[in-house]
Length: 576
Ligand SMILES: C[S@@+](CC[C@H](N)C(=O)[O-])C[C@H]1O[C@@H](n2cnc3c(N)ncnc32)[C@H](O)[C@@H]1O
Image 1 (spheres, rainbow, N blue to C red):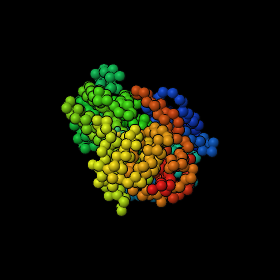
Image 2: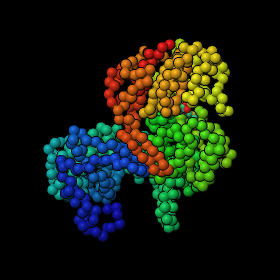
Image 3: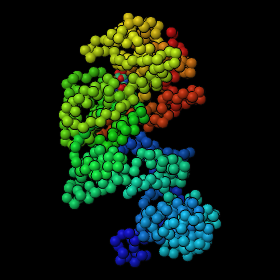
Image 4: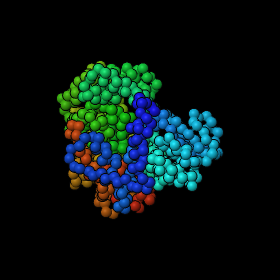
């Protein structure tokens, strides 16, 4: 036994009794009934938002899926039986040994690797008496008749039993497991799809590096210390949050355990300036997601899609700073002051900005202010709308034979005037950010700067979001085309021959008018509203896996409700 209760007679030990009760209660083939999850409207915490976004309830043809009660068993010092002598039995024996079990292997033909394990080997076929004193049995023999006998005999004795690949003979199933020291993540598909369970395990393994095992160890030590000191629960929670926000994980990844422990026990605040991409949270970088999920305080711009905030810690403070359509310098100053003050009190602050922080994002100013205040800062580049929006609209910024250079600019200068585009005459493709209010002037300036009035242009609005639409035209008529309809989302203008480069492979959907696509995505993306730490979800979960830029001919034929083909507007209808 691994617990200190050695004075218990074995059959009376509470854990022993629990095992036996559990084994009796779970009968083979009986489906546990799991209630369907329902979405309840109203303010919610970020943790609940995550559930709703990523774990929708599922009914397949009305049948309720079988579910299992999940538990981790303490088999330390307990006798466990493995029946079988090949690789599957070896893997099971190793797993049990890692959990501290005393393992007996029974089978008449054993592969040599068993000799290297600290197990009891019984070289014959299974007999019912082998189960005496066992709390758990696994049949990995692959022999059908043996599996039935092991299952029956085990259940008669109240011993938990698993017969590989035969759920009807099992009283428990083993999950796919990711182990990182004391940290264990179990994945189960309730026996429905072991293939998917293995796939998910690989994903979790990639996401959860070995440093997480050490992180659990270090925060465990911190917990012991805080409890010994009688620190209040709320203060403990604050300290764990700080530990998570500290650079400890990065240091552990680099193998610097002592530095990581010091970082956990220090209370230096710092700031990460992160680009959130053009809108779709699936376009956040992996680094952005990692840092966002650890921040104490997140100051985010209005252009940041609220779904990105579902990655935040449930207890993180979320503050929307800035308004759309121009912000005064006083506001910029107060954002910087907010970040500095928070970092100085030891908080880990994420400043989340649309696109890339250094592309018309005032990121440089914020870096200067933070460095001047002595704050440690990390910059995480984001996917800029300058390149993402054209790509999602099916417009390559460079294209052999059409464009070998591109320039990105903004419609208005810092002093409010419209740019003189003659400076950019050399660029084959021009991307103009924030053009909507000055579209007529921008067009006139570009023509004055030498672009032909028939030059193809496209206004891309709300790229990567459910509001994405593209209005195509030419320099001398884009103002009129756009003027006919309200532009609600952020939009940019792409100017140059590349606008029509892929016209031949884009769909010509007659239901579209003037190149404005009808949304094929019936469900829509979820609308999240954020107020402080409260996040509300309105609408169905989005399937970001599908993306919005599907290119295959097959996708073009099947404009079903799941496929967002909104970029496939009629480029071939462009008059130029
Ligand atoms: C203040 S700038 C910030 C740019 C951002 N830092 C970036 O790298 O994308 C805001 C402008 O970016 C463009 N923009 C941002 N998100 C966009 C989107 N999803 N679709 C089209 N344009 C977008 C619009 O021109 C908008 O007015």
